[in-house]
Length: 144
Image 1 (tube, rainbow, N blue to C red):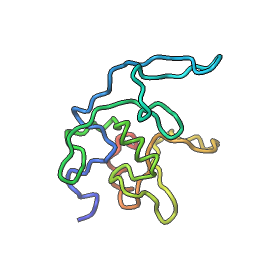
Image 2: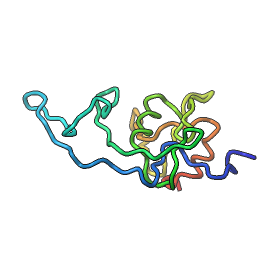
Image 3: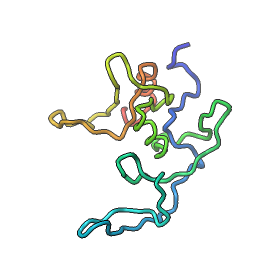
Image 4: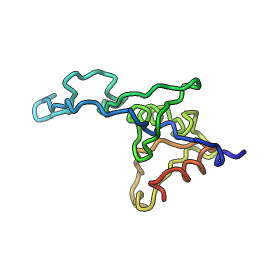
């Protein structure tokens, strides 16, 4: 059976039904003269990535025996924590394993996503491992 035929393949980063965004308890605070920054009212260091960027909070669904998230996939949404972790560690957005391929990293982009003259190219999409490139391209509605 090929990976494309794998029944129920749901990318690791996809948000699931029941995983809800946190309350909108955001405030803007001065951090230096003339500089402001966005904070949660109950800010926690785990809310920020390695560069200090604030990420959205979202609840978690239960996991199955293989430690995979459960629940109906919300195909148009990425779970912000799983997105952040896969991007920071350069893990595959489908299986959460190492994403480096023999030619480096693969990032998928939809029509009109890239400016061919822009350098460097920035993305909010985690990479994809060689095993899941075709499946990710097939599953992602953004790439249609």
